[in-house]
Amino acid sequence: MERTNISSGAPLEDSVGYSRAVRVGHFVYLAGTASYDGDTIVAIGDAYSQTQFILTKITKALRQAGADISHVVRTRIYVTDIANWDAIARAHGEVFKDIKPAATMVVVKALVDEKLLVEIEADAVIY
Image (tube, rainbow, N blue to C red; front, side, top):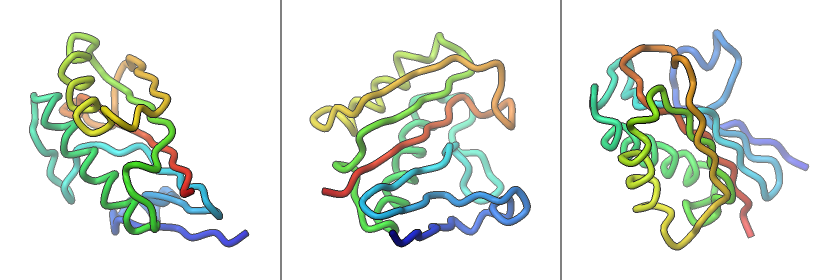
């Protein structure tokens, strides 16, 4: 099976050794995605808007991999404060309302920057 690495162009991809997404056959795996726009964190203090931004980034990466948001079968949502769960879930639901992937939300102690409130991973199957 052919493997395709999809890059976002983030400088850490080379130094850390990861890809924004990897497609192998009909499967697409998206790395943890945060609300970075280049070096800038989008929507500081707003979990709902960070989640919307992240899901837009995930949608773009899926398109680069030849997939779309309807192909997502699983999401993993990492949050730093469970008090934000409702806002994050609302933004997730707006995108995935009819798709209904298997989803997990986990509270973590911290993400790579204290201003990040949420990070999302996704897996997709192109059918």
